[in-house]
Image (cartoon, rainbow, N blue to C red; front, side, top):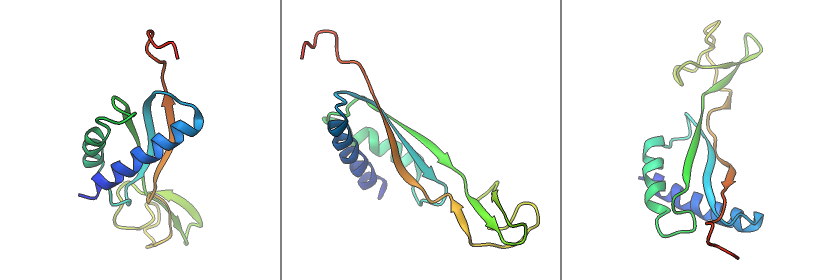
Length: 122
C-alpha cells in the first residue's frame, strides 16, 4: 500500500510548509488527486488519519479535490474532459488520443491554519 508512504510525505511537506508560513495549527490540507495518479483516494485518507497521530497535524483534515482526465483531441483540436478515464477517446468525435492534459496530479496546494487554544498565551 504505497498510500501510506504518500501520506507520510504529505505530513512532512505540510509540517515544513506550516513552519515556514508561521502556521501554528493546521486544520486542513488541500490536495488535488488525478484519476490517473495511481492512488486510491480512500486508502490515502485512511493512511493520512493514521500517520498524523502524534504529529503537529493531529486532528487536521485531508481535503481531496478529484481531478478528472482531460485529453487533447487531435481531430477536434480541443481539450475535452473524459466522463471515464478509459477508453482515451474524444467524447465528441471518438478519436483515440494519448495526449493527457490533466488527470495525473498529486499535489498539495494549500494549508488551512486555525486559531490556537484560548488558554495558549504564546
